[in-house]
Image (tube, rainbow over all chains, first blue to last red; front, side):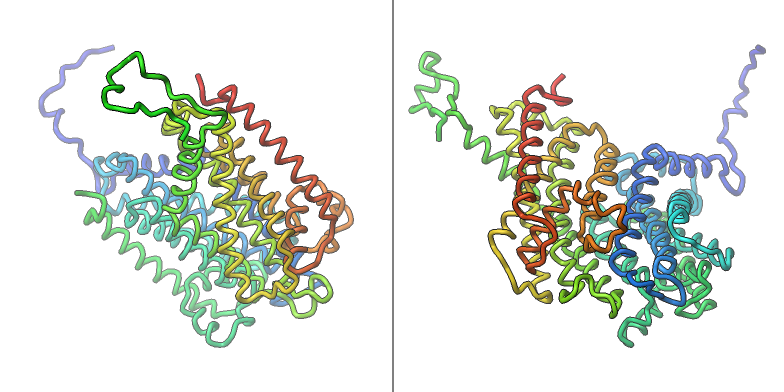
Length: 271
Length: 279
């Protein structure tokens, strides 16, 4: 080994390019390892719960060869349940990560490193998207054993899976930054995320709703993501597909801007 | 109370007259503090999250079933689908709260190191066990009362039989209170706790005839449901509310009673030996 004397010039600040790739990758891997470390809780448990939901809803509501949207009830229900598991888990990942970090005080570990607000938003939300997609794949594979799911339009499945996970990951970030205690984020989960993921057409075609609620559904992004995702499997949609693509993209842009603004201004993060 | 108080300020200074607090067989003050102040009051302090959360998710289930049900197929002839599933949803809320409260409280105290606060107090293993399990059962019943009250607004519980309803609700709350206590003692981290919740409690609760009649099951699985203790609890509870039963109440009470007794003895033994809580 050759010993070198360090010249004072070499002790200057490490130069970062336009993007701090190493920092971004480290943050992303921290978010991913955080949930993979407890994969029974974060991947297997959602899979079991979702398959149980499939079993009870098919047993309770699918009697007598019932058809919904031109397919068997179980085939109709399957994509909705996959989507529900994905959105609940991508929300849980980013929100719990931020709230735990804030309550325990280790939020400084992500605020101190040379990461810009854009890199923070990207790294944390990508962790949530990864969990959402992994849960979706696990649930989908498990479901495929019991329900003959067909793939009609793979691009719709991919687009809506990605957009829905991103949307809920960003919502989880916003909720996590806003929350000061675990109660706050639990309230958001119980009173906002769960009702929206339950009532936006996961379990039924919105044609069953009274006309006024059908109109309301057309302003609900959760409805478009479930509807578009289901179209990818069964080739039948309740709403307009094109509107769904645009709504998801625009809503995600909006949420991204909000999350970025919160991180940039240090809202409830920096003193 | 049973604690001997020094009678005067002088007595406080006298070593000869001071005696260690002597308890009768049961430390009532300690038990009440443990049961009520630490268990029940703690629960109601988080009222929005712990009381209203289960209420909202229970009502969401009812709502989803109400919208998604098919007009053609009634679950059981003569009984509305919502009428059929509402009792199960109420009982599931009781069971889940009773389990979650005891287990989460113990895991939290163990991980934060606060478990010493109860271990140092002059409480016998039985009093410790009873404090955790009974406070959790009480909270479960409080949630049940709230969900049941809300459900009774729009579901017809015409053939209400108080002894069956109260009997099975209390038995379920006790069963899951004791189960939660035992699991809380066993679990060392949050993911141990949520593994039991996700792979034992939720499947037992959902695959118990909450949402479907036994006749709906495929032949092969029909016998298996009779090995699920929650099935008896839900069936008896439903019989008390809407008068439709698929099993015998005597068998139900016997199964639940034996399980409660077994879990209580196990929990008592675990506290006595300090399983995972004493070095």
